[in-house]
Length: 192
Image (cartoon, rainbow, N blue to C red; front, side):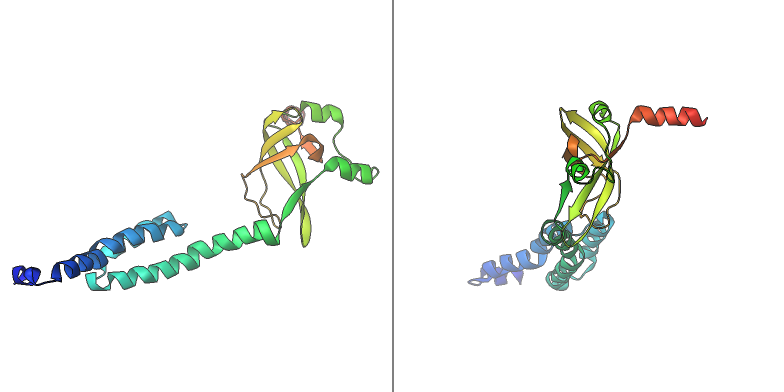
């Protein structure tokens, strides 16, 4: 019977199209779709569920999973990117400029403290945020090249669209406070 169907004109192409649509494509398309979902366990679960769905329903089931992936995976990412780069744009403010504008009420570390800041030390920086109040957050220094420093954000921001642990590049004049690694050790020894 199958042999007779395959010999009929045009049926081989239809057969190959059916194999593609109902056999090959759902698995490949789902593998691409699940990359949008942030939860790794949910990705594996969806890929395993595919083979429990009846073959004739798989293309429609995969289309439904695409909608889910857009809603729970892509939409929050787009919202976060929109917030970070368009709506809540933030920028580092210079501690030195703020100190020069308000020398009595806005203190910053002196040049001697700034000169010894290095990897392992913590510095406080301030960000201005468009449409919202700014934030002051701690950064652990990981690298120093002259007056340019690189560090890792230690706080969980409220208004600044950044993640804890994100890399921050800044200038020595941006620092508004610091905790030197050596000072922390001395304070602990004095308390004991």
